[in-house]
Length: 201
Image (cartoon, rainbow, N blue to C red):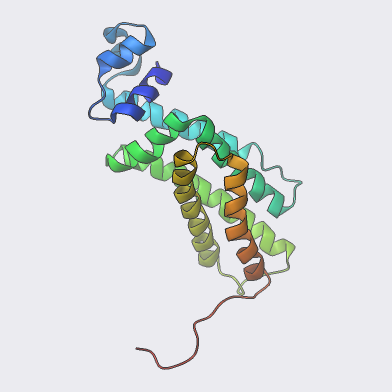
């Protein structure tokens, strides 16, 4: 039922999707859909939670503790884009549909995003420790800001990946790593860009 619902929601959008079509795709009667999953809003929430759980599992399952931070980040990024490529309809429900529907749906997506940001922030913190960077050289807020920037770039690149189905998730992952890690490696060594000195306008 959830597979059918994800397909319909991703193609029709939340408001245009009908329980009749979902039931037909699932091969069951509409009363059974209501019996097992409740209202249309309940069904949409169940779809969001399942796809968010799948994405969370895809990312966290590859970041093994014994790996170097750079390798952990690479694996997490690659798992993220791999999920998007393999579950395009699920990503559409999460990112394109749920975010624009307001509460409670947008709140479910916000929880998922916070989890991803916290995971990336933890990897950045580990990389800092590996490079010998300690507070107050880089504050906690700075780490969270960098993690948010990296996740935001990843979200933008998913649109590129979806619009270019011929491109592999690995290539897209390498693009993000080239953009983020090559610059981040300098930050970890204390080499940061600062505005040029001079009169402010």
